[in-house]
Length: 116
Length: 113
Image (cartoon, rainbow over the protein chains, first blue to last red):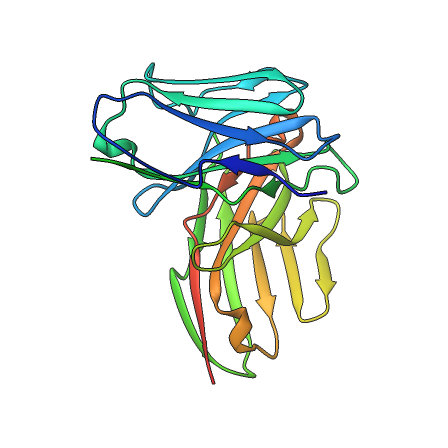
């Protein structure tokens, strides 16, 4: 398996623009997670899905952020409008489920976002 | 919610020595404790995990211990090598919201030859 795939790997945009980050989880994994990593705040869980359904979005910073999972092999994280404080590395991760080692989360390579 | 504190924030060790990183958690219902290693510019990768029904787990040079009473867990790396240099994160979650990993702030480990 190719692992978790994210695109783009790097994104530079101007404040106010819409940004869409994409993720393809490992095939067969029922859970998908979106994280944000910054020096100041560390690694934060934004939202996670089970079988394409959002389970917990309490980490989504504000209404400018939205995430969707239209099918088992694709998810998007959208920021509209983007602001300089959104600059971070955004990771997508996936896992099989719960118990017996199934909960191991496999991270994608991340998207490095810079908002000017 | 869960709060995980991690110490130290940086750790410098001589090659061949041991490294120990400690984490404390606040939610007594937490029962899953993974450790992730992140090399510079790379993704976090799981190196070992432990569940609350086990006090210690070992995998070659890496071991993790858990003290449920005191609500703390530790990562031990023996015979450190330069390739162990990275940032290490501890995390915790519980069975009610197991997917909701709360990460510690990370420990930058530098192994000098």
